[in-house]
Amino acid sequence: MQKVELLYLSQEDIMGLGIGWEEIIHRVELALIEQADKTIENPPKRGIHSRENAFIHEMPVYLKQMDACGIKWVSGYPDNREKGLPQILGLQIMNCPDTGVPLCIMDCRWITGVRTAAVTAVTVRHCAKADSRGIAIIGAGVQGKMHLRAIKHVMPSLEVCRVYDISPQAAKVYADTLGKELNMEVLPCSSVEEAVREVDIIFTATQKVSRPFIPTDALKPGMLGGGLEAGRAWPKELLHGADKVITDDLGQTSQYATTGAFEGGLPEFYGELGEIVKGKPGRENDEERILAFNIGIACEDISLGQYIYERARDKGAGIMLPLMEKEF
Image 1 (cartoon, rainbow, N blue to C red):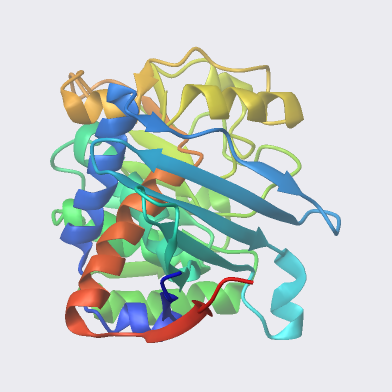
Image 2 (cartoon, helix red, strand yellow):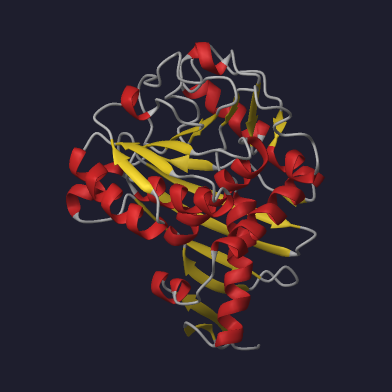
């Protein structure tokens, strides 16, 4: 029997590869195109829940055009911040599509952070007004930061970000840090209502919430809105009154409607993001009000993971670990 080894990549190994936003966004777009072409085997994520308001999800996928397969095993535990741990943690395994042999095991926290923001950046590229100047970010955590970075990359015309967080200190640190980093005006706000005034884009980067908190008059003509909490932050007047509502995977998103997401029931979806990447019209005029709720699908993670694995292998990054050496 052949000796079997696999590559281990820590978070720092991955970050040390120097992968930029354009590369990340490109890998996400490739995954979305395959999803639209139906050339993926991507079952809806399943989860276990060892504590209230927490989850561990399994996310397997095979991308046929890319010939890449693997699984993400990711947890979300909001109370971790009180224990000095990240809320999102997990691993990703890349497998050989010919043999099933595990090729690489890698941290998936950074992958989750950047690919989630990259999906939103793709949405902004196709569905926001081309000359958008202002954005509101609700939630100053990891995803709030990643989203502003990714969105600014595809929408360099952005000049002002208005940020709100339940922690005023978190909003201040966010403003101080990202304002300098992105060379834009970042203003901490004292309320959601203040944050969403006079902007072109609203994005909610929060944990699961119990009730909507976006004002019913917040989405003006020409605006793009969206969030990570399956529409829970958005009132039914907006969910069912927007001109277009899109998502990354209709099947998976529909499942969330059975667990309390989407006030007033599942909205009528215009289409999937992959279809728009392939050419279906996104924004068609400057008056449309568009909402986007991308749930996050495994093909996005594994597409990026395949790129990371190949880049690390070529650069000699990471540590080779023995898995098995002889028959038993």
